[in-house]
Image (tube, rainbow, N blue to C red; front, side, top):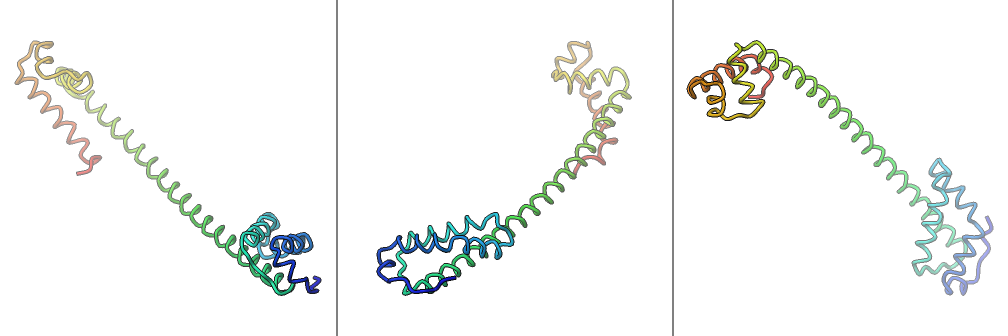
Length: 181
């Protein structure tokens, strides 16, 4: 690295001196950023971010050495920020992935329980006495009201209510262990 002094008037003009430093030391800056990041992939982005920040500020450096010292420190800090950001992003990605796997596992287990539950309910409905089964299906699958069932089957409303009560009691005994209380 050449650390000979640059005329202060160049720095007071603003961007011109920084452009010169950027052009002159760009490859050195990128190699340095690549070593700090342990990857060349983001090195150019880091260097450009640092210089964009410098161009937006009004920094006056006494010498090229002072400017280089400041730029290298800024590149180092930007690299460290990027590494920390990537670590945090990776940590959140792992947490999200673990949570997603846990939810999928729980949902898979719940789906299995639901299927088993409905198979048991269907078996119990099929094992009901024929008239009781017919009334239950008309009420809960076809969604008829009790008076409609009574009219269609020619039975009293009280008989319909009793048969539904019996059917629900039989089903409740078989399904209580699957339902939350």
